[in-house]
Amino acid sequence: MRRKIVAGNWKMNLDFQEAQDLVEGIANLCEEKQPDCDIIICPPFPYLEMTSDMADDTQYFYVGAQNVNDNDSGAYTGEVSAKMLDSLGTQFCIVGHSERRKYYNEDNALLAVKIKKLLEYQIVPIYCVGEVLEEREANTHFDVIKKQIEEALFNLDVADMENVVIAYEPVWAIGTGKTATPQQAEEVHKFIRTLICEKFGEDIANQIRILYGGSCNAKNASDLFAQENIDGGLIGGASLKAEDFISIAVQASK
Ligand code: PGA
Image 1 (cartoon, rainbow, N blue to C red):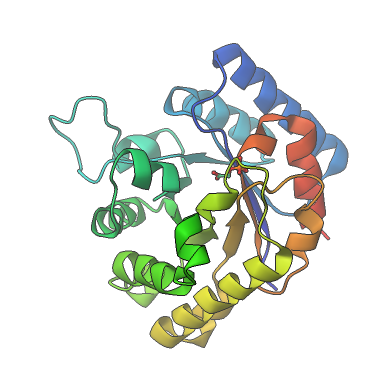
Image 2: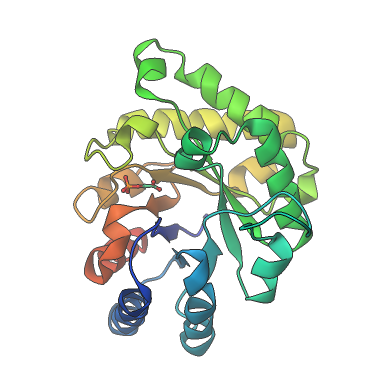
């Protein structure tokens, strides 16, 4: 049985006080509801330390970053390295979110390097894949996802692959209120697991966790999480409200 993950991607939202209130709200609700899944909070960089301190104090959740630079250190103004993340107690990092692919031109080759860097520091990459609407309409989404998986993950060895989480996020469902149906999502998750099985073997394929992301919320989470190959969610908008986020975590605990 794979333990489910509910990860909150706050994106570029909230000021420091709001972030602190939200982390506290999440911790309080965890205390009350005792969700039985891995909860990850991915705040903006400036709030990682505060979130990490709270994670240490309460032990209710893990902390993840939303991005990392592909270099070790040096003259890269404005960037943040895997070593820096590690030194703040960051255990996970989102890589290849569609917003990074779109606005910052991140391609699979660059993402492959970022994933390796994170693994060097024992930070678990949450690698995002997913098609845009035109690709789904043209029925090329399986090819697109296959390429994203092959080019960023297939150079890893089995030991590293064990420590990767994958998130399927159809771009047309992100922030649009248009969720993939549980069947549409399950079909892609199953496809991804098969690709992993063919390359890395059955053991890894059975243990790797594949999250769904894209307008996942407190109303639709349980139907999505009931699918055989959906191991939790990467939650954007609904992760900014403690009640909604923990309601999703409770639904992942069944
Ligand atoms: P959303 O975002 O839940 O707001 O659609 C998900 C994501 O981008 O990770």
